[in-house]
Every structure is written in C-alpha cells, then in structure tokens.
Image (cartoon, rainbow, N blue to C red; front, side, top):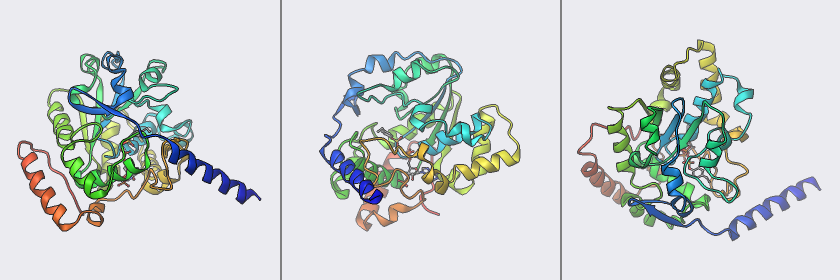
Length: 305
Ligand SMILES: Nc1ncnc2c1ncn2[C@@H]1O[C@H](COP(=O)(O)O)[C@@H](OP(=O)(O)O)[C@H]1O
Ligand SMILES: CCc1ccc(OS(=O)(=O)O)cc1
C-alpha cells in the first residue's frame, strides 16, 4: 500500500514536470540570462555588498555546489549538523536567480552577515559594489569538455533553463556560447584575469578531485581559518561525491523544475566523462576551436587523468 502511494507521488511529480513550461531567456549586455533575471537586472546590478560577504562564483556545472558545501563546512568548523540546517540554496543565496516566490537578491538582503553568496555571472556582470567593498571571491573552473557534458544533462533535467535539444545540437550551441551565462571561454578567462587585481581564490574542479584535502586547505587559509587535521579529514569525507549524493541538503530534491529521474543533480562527478559523449569528429572540432580561443591566456586545464 505504502509503495503504491509512493509510486503515485512519483508519477504525479513526473507529470507535473512534463507540463511545466521551459524558462524564457533574454540578454544583458550580450549575455544570455533567464528572462525573469533580466527583468529585475537593475536590482541585481545595484545590489549592495558588505565587506564581509563571500562570493562563490563559477560557470554553471563547474563544481559550484561542491565548493559551496566545502565553504559552509569550513565556516562551521566541520559541524555536519550545522551544515545540514537547510538546503544549500537557502544557506547561500543564488544572486541572479528568480523564483515566483522569491529572488536571490531578496534572500541575500534578508540574511544576517556574514553572508556567502553564489553566482554564475561573468566577471563583467558582477554587481560593482562587490569590487568596491573588496569582497573575497572563490571562483571554481572545470575543463570545458566535462563542463559542456554536465551542462547538457543539467539543461535536460532543469526546466528553469532552455531545452538543450539533441547532444549534436547542444555541442554547437555551447561552442558558440549561446547558453545561459554566456561563453565558457569568456567566463573562465575573464575571472582568471581579474584575480591579478582582486582577492580571488581560483580553484579547479580537477585539482579538487585529485587532492581534495590540499584544495580544501587552500579554501580554509583563504577564509582565514585554522582547522585541525581531523576536522579537515572530516570535511574531505563529507564533501566526497558519494556522501554529497546522499545528502538531501545538497541535491535540490524539492526543486519542482528539476527532474532527477531524467538526470540526477549529482550525476557522475568524474574527470573525462566527455569521452563517453563526444564523437571523434566533435573532439577534433572542439580541439581546434579551443586552441583558437585559449591562445591569449595562461590558463590551462586537465581534461583527463
Ligand atoms: N562532491 C563532489 N565531487 C565531485 N563532483 C561533484 C561533487 N558535487 C557535485 N559534483 C559534480 O559537479 C557538477 C555540478 O556542478 P554545479 O554544482 O556547478 O552544478 C556535476 O557534475 P557531473 O554532471 O559531471 O556529474 C556533479 O556531479
Ligand atoms: C533551479 C535553480 C538552479 C540551480 C542551480 C543552477 O546551476 S548550478 O547547478 O549551480 O550550476 C541553475 C539553476
């Protein structure tokens, strides 16, 4: 009986999701953003940062939630109970996201300091008061191939974003930068340049995978904290893919616009998954495009182990 009821709930959820319309998009200074964000752009742009605000910035699907959970655990001295107090999107408002009931800006304005805020904005669209107040920023970047694959599956399951179409179509859309939050190239390069003149800790998903403790220690030092080795080990464990996948507070489980049956929020969490998705022709075409677009930067990425 109980199982049947559960099945019914699942079925209803699936139906509700199927009937939901896709989020519309528009542009701010040539960058594609959700239309409801563009509609309140003045409010986003004029957001008043405070000097003790911390920003976690990234291109979508680069390891944002992972970094957010690491930061929250460091801020709470590794206390799991405290970090599980609420879903990640309530603990750390998503600056440029608007829901029918609230916006990230309203959430942030209602929050006591010190605040940690998440954004996917390209560097030129970050509200100027973050620069004026000299706020600390953690940026996380991921290699473009895996980032593209992850974003494709996320757009499929998230009705808040445009329908990605087929993989072959999406491959071209992504390379052309015609996705929400703009071109991957401009995003990672723009934030990379900015770190020379602003307190930005620039992290890489691949380095976090290879040596999570080393990267978590970097974050801890950047935040001015000094935690014991055993606390660091606890944070490494609790922010591992397997543990975070089971954590209801890091999986957007109650987000009605996401269909986790189509693709879970914590999908694979590996380096090099692109090899299961790219055709040989696509890989060749990608590499040519990549070389051209990355010729003017010292940034480099690990694409496989
Ligand atoms: N603790 C963790 N370790 C490794 N990867 C993680 C992780 N938590 C989330 N991810 C991966 O990060 C991506 C989501 O990034 P974001 O939080 O920016 O949306 C997903 O990638 P995949 O789709 O490749 O699995 C997700 O699985
Ligand atoms: C539905 C709100 C939402 C949540 C997360 C998003 O991106 S990411 O997972 O942080 O990369 C986008 C929209």
